[in-house]
Length: 172
Image (tube, rainbow, N blue to C red; front, top):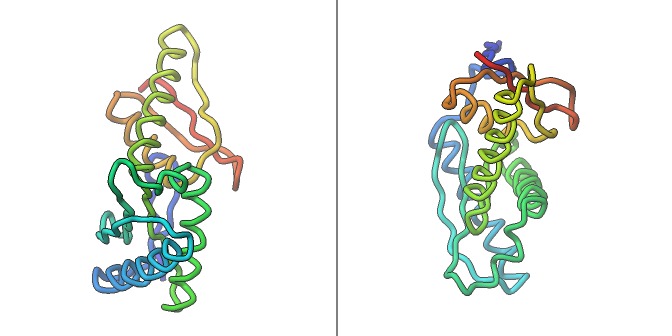
């Protein structure tokens, strides 16, 4: 029924009935409709781009530099709106959604913040620490961290459960 993949100690279940590109594009369309209505209700400006990346629908809201969209680009707001959007997609399609929502470049900004956290943890290792733990974060953010850590030539593993799940970095 399902295959299990261990990606640097972050276990993720991948179902044999993974969504097709067409299904992911449909998720993106449903999500875009939901976000567009949300923006209209809030009287916010933004353009919506839909893409499929790494087996997920990816919906980005962009706007000109002086736009009022920045009120939604804070990490907690993006996460909450992403969960609401996922629920809207699930309600419409009947299938669980793992879509990623980016508002005003918030994902790129968060990835840069995570890289700084990794660099700080590596500095702790260079100063003699046996390991360095990062704060708890979402599975998506842990995946980004694992990629950065690997690029830097170190090892990362995830520890803890639920909201306490975090990444620990060690030397290779």
